[in-house]
Amino acid sequence: MEAHRLQDFTEIDKLRLQLLNNSKDATSFHHLEAEVCPSSRDILNRIEDIILGIVTSLSQDEAPVLKLPNRSSWANISFDSTVGLQMNSGHSVTALRSDSPSSVNKFAQVLKILSVIYRLVQSNTYATKRDIYYNNTQLFGSQATVDSIVDDISCMLRAPRRSLHVLATSKGLISGDLCYMEEDGMRIDCRSSSAAVPVSSNIAGIRNIVSSAKFIIIVEKDATFQRLMDDDFCTKLPPCVIITGKGVPDMNSRLMVRKLWDTLHVPIFALVDSDPHGIEIMCIYKYGSMAMSFEAHSLTVPSVMWLGLLPSDLQRLQVPSDVLIPLTKNDEKKLSSLLQRPYLTDQPDWQKEMEVMQRTKVKAEIQSLAAISPDFLTNIYLPNKLRYGGWV
Image (tube, rainbow, N blue to C red):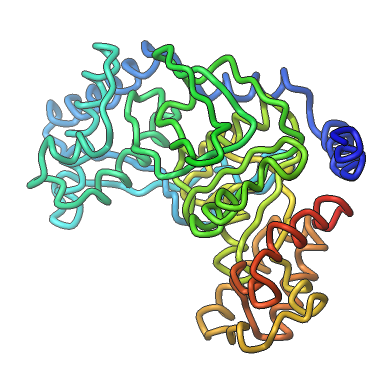
């Protein structure tokens, strides 16, 4: 019975072989990742160089200036189909002048966080971004300010955030055929059908991954993820893993997906709403984001495939019109923007699907499939998609 069930999903095995043939070998992936993980001594030296520059300026009666890479301009970004969106080496910078009323506050904020990072790395201790914010709430004003500056510093020092000893609380969940060990030695078992496991806040420390999963599904929204859990989805099909970043993914969810790809090398599918927002979230997992393009080598998984909900599925399955939602002006603007992204030329099938959405001017949530039948998603839609290769 088990063998027969696995034989029904041979399209997934074919996809895995194709992905392995198209990708670079695992050693090159690890080599790339190692290039962006400087040692603690390197981090300390880079911070000391920045402080030395400030002291030198002061000694010469000049106003110190900090130069932060510009992470919000497409002009600084290039696209590589094997990596995704990555920051150009000759990127533009934003100058923070200590004598300018418009930037002096951010100048002080950057220096404060640099000093915190220096102490953390030097003492080999860790702190969360929340800890840093509460270290001086009056200076920072908001958690979002700390989050942005930590990423600015990570980019400026050419080091992933985990190398700065700054952690972020994870919001993602994971479940399925997966066991692993945390850095502190705790064994994590994701095979429970009743409760999902929070994604680790220290992905780099995960080791001894054990899994028989044939594929992984990235689920856009928590509500859909919980529905798959309630329906025991992972026990009805070949062994698999499901993971959600609960909307726009946090870095730990993205790092976890990349970790699983590097370790298991099995197909990874995205299950997102048939709307511009869902498509963009899928693109973040696959190709990365402009803001985090400097860390693309350890965050992106270009092998991600679009499983659903496809715009063409809405017509093919005759989803009832009363659950379809008209695109708003903002949706149309977002869709046009997505179609102009550099990676879409590499995905003609994705372009066709987005053009269907553009032409029909409607969107739909994954939950809209319940209008066909309550269990349509888990018992019919996903099994058939996976059985017959219904992805793009």
